Length: 285
Image 1 (cartoon, rainbow, N blue to C red):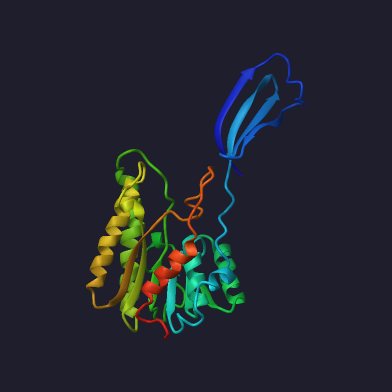
Image 2: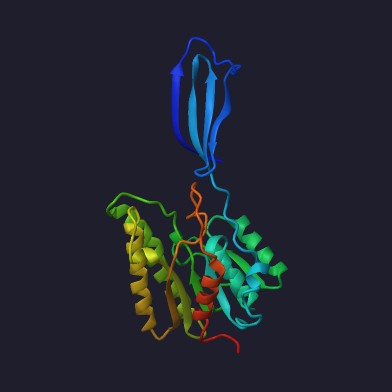
C-alpha cells in the first residue's frame, strides 16, 4: 500500500538500540504528501526508507446521492452502453442514466468485481443494469453483452493508464493513446451504429488539456484532440444523432488522485449535464 521513494543505508558495527534482528519503526509522517519515513536497522546496517502511502481507491457518489440530481423517468426508454462503467466517471454516468430510468449495460476490461458492485448498487436503488466484459484493446468485436439488441447511446469512458511523460512527445506513448481514444472508439461506434434501430447518440469525454496541455501530457492531449475531430465527422454521418465531445476538467478518479492533498469538483452536476445533452433528442417529457 505504498510507493517507494528512496533508501539510505549505512553500515554500522553496533546495532541500533531499538533494533532486534531486522527491525523498522516510523520516524516521520507528513500528511500533506502522505510521506512516511521508516527507520530500519539490523545485520550491521541502519538507515531510512522513504515511501508515500498509496491513496485509497476513489469512491464515487452513491446511486442514491446521484438520484437526487436526476428527475425520475427523464431517461426512460433509452438503452445505453457505458464503456468503462465499472469505476470512475463511467460509474457515475451509469448511475445517472439508471436513476433517470434508462436501461444500462456497463462494461469492464479487468474489474469484474467492480462492475458487479456497480450493478448491484444500481439495482438496489431501483435501476436496471447489466454487466459485460469489453477490453477495447482486443478490438471492437469483443463481447459487449446483450449485443444482439441495439443500443441508443454509447458513453465511451474507456481509458488506458494515463502517465505523465517528458516535456515533448513520445511516439510510443502517443500510439497507445490513439489506439484507445481514436481507433477503438471509431471501430466500436461503427459497429454499434450498424445495429442501432435509430441514430446512435455518442458521448466522448475529452479534456481541458487539449487547450493547454501541461508538461508530460502532450501525447494524451493530442489523442483526445484527434477524438474530437472524429466526433465532428460523426456529426455529419446520418447514422449518428447527438454527438457530444465534452472537455472535462480533472475530476477525482483512480487515474487522477495523487499523493498530495487536492480538491476536485463535484462530478455529478457536470456529468448530469453531459448525459442530458447527449439524451436531448430522446428524453421523456
